[in-house]
Amino acid sequence: MSATSDISLQLAGVPETLLITLYARAAESQKSDAILQDEKAIEIAQRLDYDFAKFEPGWSSQLGCVIRAWHIDMLVQTFIDTHPEAIIVNLGAGLCTRYLRLETAQVRWYDIDFPEVIELRRQLFEG
View (cartoon, rainbow, N blue to C red):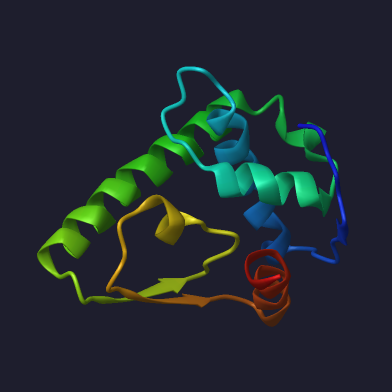
């Protein structure tokens, strides 16, 4: 992944694990036969000053993350289609970009996570 990093990370422990799923979505999205398209994941991965190379050997973990994300996308979209004015609470949101991949026009979406993760989300999604 080519980096134009402008955000230095201060994550460790459990909060750092959000980078695994971010990398998986970004790497998959760059394939011609991608299961899932997540342009925001690509953008975020490029903005972060982080060595994602350590995740490259874990292709099966990457595939699992992508299939899980795709499946949950389908479940959530079905729920939204049935309840177009839903309130969705995303616990342990990490750098989830699901609300950008789905049709969520009337949905209120709340992302909840550790304070340092929410601060990182603010930098990446609001700035």
